[in-house]
Length: 126
Image (cartoon, rainbow, N blue to C red; front, side):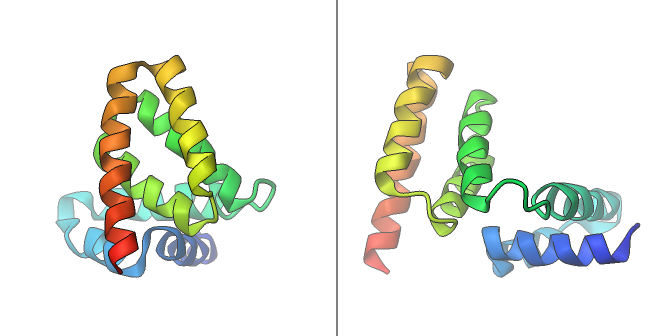
């Protein structure tokens, strides 16, 4: 493992997804999944998200669309929250959801809207 890339990835991952979520994911990995968590942190968050060629906002927009296409709603919510944190506006997210409806299907977009509504309600209350 490249320790510097791992540390960079850990910092980026915590910044985008929240330290509490990341710390919990790593702590709950257990012996079986610990190596996988390290791999994700080093390569996904260190090598890819750590590459500044694309802004975090752009990466978040891409991820929101790709994860919706995969219909992975738990991960989608996580990255939707990260997109908000990375500066993607409500209007931009609304437009992305419309594009998801056309290219990924209405049922996926309906679920994304349900999640988005709940997330925005939580954020508006805090």
